[in-house]
Length: 210
Figure (cartoon, rainbow, N blue to C red):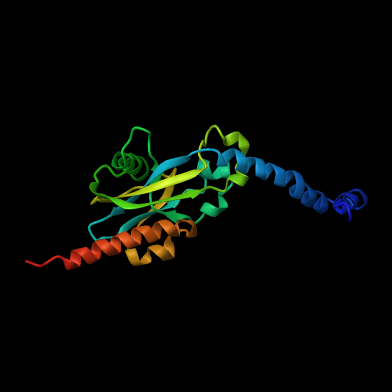
């Protein structure tokens, strides 16, 4: 106890699977997690776009992620995506502008070919992934520590169809119902979108009627 090795003495004298697993996680597991965190924290953040797509009734499009998506399998978050509703989003290519990136993602994942551009939102946000649990061998495939997100608003009269790869279900949702449906990890994005929609609605009401 004085030299901090009681755990080692108990491991040798009282070995059992539970103790061995706990000691491994507290020593080698911790060192591996710190190594992963250090490696991935040195990487840049990915530029990405969030598509705020509304229909003629003013409803907002949300999609339910596919738990079997390759990203979920690689990062071990399949269970967390079983009921994961979010705004459509995706990465922005190096030579793409925000609008073009959204249109490309919307056509591939939602089957939307006709969307009317409204505006790029002024708000921007970012987040960092849980890099301590990322397998090191995925470094080459996922060369970022997190994402920087911009928001782009579009309207459409088309009926979206999920690609069954990224999304397995799509719904038009009233703005007041977004918070109750969207995944908790995406709440910070929902707050930005709702603030924008509320401000846009108030400005529309303030316009003089002719």
